[in-house]
Length: 216
Ligand SMILES: CC(C)(COP(=O)(O)OP(=O)(O)OC[C@H]1O[C@@H](n2cnc3c(N)ncnc32)[C@H](O)[C@@H]1OP(=O)(O)O)[C@@H](O)C(=O)NCCC(=O)NCCS
Image (cartoon, rainbow, N blue to C red; front, side, top):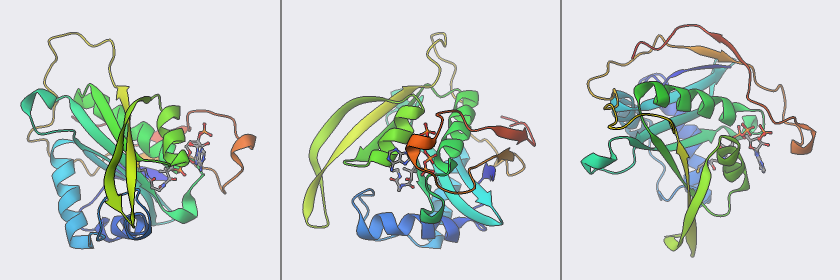
């Protein structure tokens, strides 16, 4: 699998298709209508201009995506990002999510962001496992905060300090006026098929090659 910045024209439809089932039939996403390719294209452009929007590609197909955007609008939140990840159902359990997040978090560190936050509609054992494997810590739950599919849902929040040893005052993240960097591609090895979790050795997925170094 290769991981690269998403292309708003080429990847929008594939990302929309991966996301749609989580919108249509689960409370994982609190959206009610799945966004179409044009809307996804706008989201990719918006995220990529300041933060990150990555896709994983295997066999010529997008098999998952991960992105980071602003956590909240107020200026003091400039160092905080909200992250999320979606993997195509046929490719779950093969290390795609972990590879995407590893690459995403590395790039956010390079940009100078300090804290990543993830909101997870409960229950979601796969998402909780992924975030906790990546070092995120649970910070609390908003009870019955969203109404979808005929019931109320809790949302748990997890956070990760991206650079716990960084000096203060913080350098401003390099997130303004950053040109898209479509040439930065990394290759990752993923498992050939889904195996039972008990048979897996927890490990960082091997990054087989960094084909280009981020320029930012
Ligand atoms: C959550 C999601 C992104 C995980 O992606 P994935 O590619 O299947 O996960 P990975 O194979 O990389 O596994 C990551 C870790 O989570 C664990 N994990 C994966 N699925 C799991 C499950 N169903 N139950 C428990 N643990 C699970 C794995 O054991 C792995 O840990 P390890 O590397 O130490 O063995 C994927 O299931 C998905 O797209 N779900 C629907 C959308 C969603 O919930 N997105 C998150 C929104 S908050």
